[in-house]
Image 1: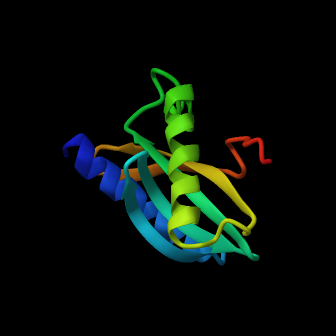
Image 2: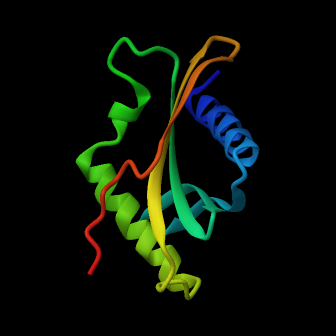
Amino acid sequence: MSSSSLGAWGEARAREHLLAQGFTLHASNWRCRDGELDLVAEVEGTLVFVEVKTRRSSAFGGPEEAVSARKVRHLVQAALAYLDAHQLTDRDWRIDVIAITATRGPRLVQLEHFVDAVRVERA
């Protein structure tokens, strides 16, 4: 399985997880000039931008550790672009990370949902 196929598989597991937790999904793989948002969801009136990281092992750290400072900047810029494009700039929002570890096949080994994983200074 290629890394892009593994990523798509992981995003599907993340969608299932969010739906089971009562989230409403608004978008998948939303792209703009500033980057891409894997999933856009909503729960209890809060928009949630979800970055999904899927790995086959944690030998080099957990999947969540792959969210670099550069990736965080792109996530924030993309989230702001999404809010602007959909005229939602007055909404509460946050950025979560879902970290998935899978075996070959793939089979889910672990799914961790880090709520409000990216702290954003708001004006």
